[in-house]
Length: 182
Image 1 (tube, rainbow, N blue to C red):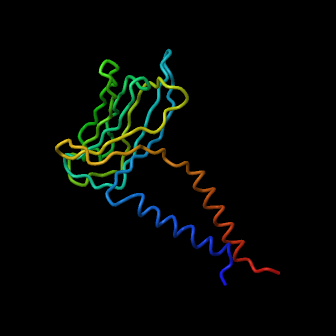
Image 2: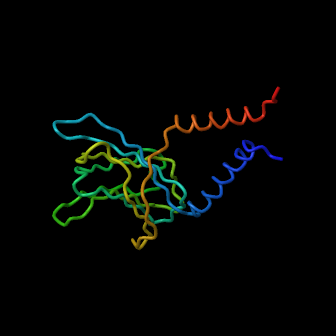
Image 3: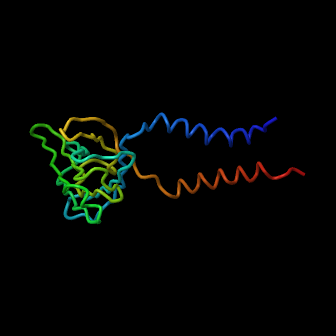
């Protein structure tokens, strides 16, 4: 008979794999962000988002838009891509939110080649007008004819310390389960 703790240690990783197969279908774009509070100037609350992309093989002309809500963001600045992989991408654009329309602003990245490198940061600096700290945003993936093919929400990059704590806890449970009883 399998002891409950051992059964749990076997089932948790299998359940995670099964859920990830359904949650992330092949080719689904994942955009993660890290928000950094920059040194403020005057009354402006300056921030930076560094975005990483994964789980999608772009083709030439495909791209993504990350949206910046009217009333929460101002003065968007798309930072140039600086790594050698940046040649795989057209220069990023930042379009300002427009309260007169009203229309959100957006950051646009577009692939210049098939299967461009995703090993770089897409970066935008901005003035944060909301309360607290900025968080997740909506995004769209578009094809070469600018038709939306997928929508989603950006996710914060997981804290390394959290992942290490979870791994250490699982390792401790595993070690305890294997220890012979006196």
